[in-house]
Length: 465
Image (cartoon, rainbow, N blue to C red; front, side, top):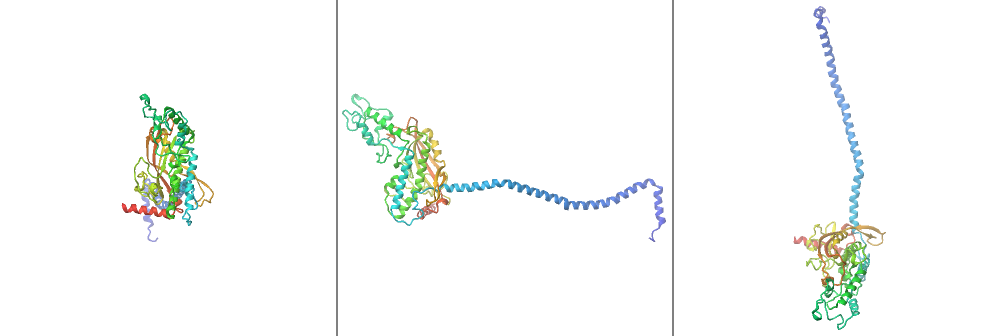
């Protein structure tokens, strides 16, 4: 303070005294300067504080809000996610349930220690009785037998004729050059059916090659055929369904062959059952063959019909003689198949695959309906692989049509000699189908012999590639 010269200060202040007009702006500038410096300092600190506290808190709140929204959205989606998971599990269960089926014998599978041949013979009897029950369920019938035709014709006037009518055949020339040719329905009766009637109540058509009929006898024959058609729900017989004759003529060779026979034909029985069930559903509103959508089951088998003419290698046991290759088998490659599958499915890790052939006579307008019904889900019961569990009703839908063909029915053809299909145009429908079995569902009861068959066939296919 000693160095401060008060006089000098007053001298400098006298300048403002003499220039009062400058004093106010200078004071304002000084005040502004004094206010600006702390404001900047305070503003910087305030921004920093806001950044650290308010803005960060805001971002935290926004983040938490998003998380809460995501959590709420996830909560809302949870029922949908659970539904998708349930659907996936349900689909897997449904696939397994298709193969959880009733067995013809609960004493055979899995590998039994019993050695008696009666066990396998009992399986064959149950197979045939099961087929008989299927046919009764669709009111299966047959055209007149030779004995029935002979009895009817013998009651007709027969002057100067042999035992079966003799002189005038449908294409012969009678007295005075009269042509005895008749309508297509009459002319067809002179032709022969490939097989004479069986002792079974369901027979094929009669062999008419020896019959030479008069007009009156033809009318009697036609009336008899019509009566048989009106009494039947569908033309079908045991010999038309694979396995019936097989087990009727079956002979025991050895335990392994017999055991495999039972397994393969158990699979075949399920497939045959689906074919007959389809016919039953199609014809449930019909009164007889004449108005039924499905007129006749010509064949349901595991080899190709006569019209295809293909030869194939079969995976499994080949039967003897005329039954060779008749048994159902697993398809492990295209070489085992009736036709190259458009599905590209062969027996593998997830499914076992078989193929079968079915030929039916249907009303022309019902061909697609039959194919759709064949592939429709069908109910079945399951009582456990030992047959001792409470019964459960499941659905199975294991058929895919791989190949189809149709041909018009010629009433003059010997195949249809004694059949009456009604007034509508009938066609022959020929299908090759694929059948899937869930390995997970029945692998525990599948015989080791059959597993070895599949493995050996697959290895043979691999070596040939």
